Image (cartoon, rainbow, N blue to C red):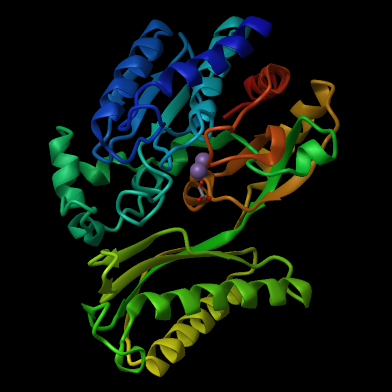
Length: 413
Ligand code: GLV
Ligand code: MN
Ligand code: MN
């Protein structure tokens, strides 16, 4: 397992070289470096005897069908897009580990097909909507999204066509649940819990729901030297007041009876963005997460109301759009139980935990049984170039893989 573990990590580091930006790992949906990732993974999949295709959502899919193998297939994988200035392991590790599981399946003579999917998009960076790849595989890709534009005015439809794919074929990306045993996603924890408890792995029980919104504050751009303070309609000060109000509201809720709520404004665009011009228009993102769907929607409404009140008090207009809302989901109990057994058989303590981060598994869960295995995140760091994973923990995930595959190999159907 040592060599396999080293290879799974080395492959992530290699794939990290395929990036949109020199010196930083940034790989958004269907941008040119994705072609390089596909070429690299395709070669590896083909060397493993897998049949490879790219579906219309840009997911790279490798099917391994052992001789005489039948029954429902196991699906494995994670995403290959990244946030800007990312680490090397978020998503990609779930793909390189999946390929090592196929190696193990070959070695133990598993008689069940495995499909490995490198999902094209999970982060929501390019179009403000996450899970584009897994939505297509789950059969819930909303075609209205094809008209969405990226920061350069390129529509999603143009991006798909530009990659050599046909949006008319998006429906063919969906899996038939009758043919699938389940989907297992391996992923770094992206938080500090496992490290704090001195544990290597966890089986995920549920994934927090998330809402993503865009808000636009529109005031009036004007001269910074001649416009008296009292006559300004500054869109940026309105947005800034609201951003800090969101933060203090969440902290207060956390201290009282709602420790689960988190909310983030991670993107701000100022127009015209010049030092001597009062900001006329500010667009911001809002990301709200909660394990309770009711609470999440309640808070989203609350934050919008706060924005309306703050903007109104400053003579600034407010528009907002809900870009996506993903409900909290439980992982499949039966598939999770097989992972539990594999963890214990591999000799590791069994730890269950929920995920605060979103994952492709939460979208797939609507279509097929879905389960997740977390690997400890050193320093609890993710969405950052310092993101890491230890060789020891990757080896542990491979040992679990062996036990899991042995188990499903012994099952019928
Ligand atoms: C995906 O990384 C997320 O934002 O949770
Ligand atoms: Mn991520
Ligand atoms: Mn991820």
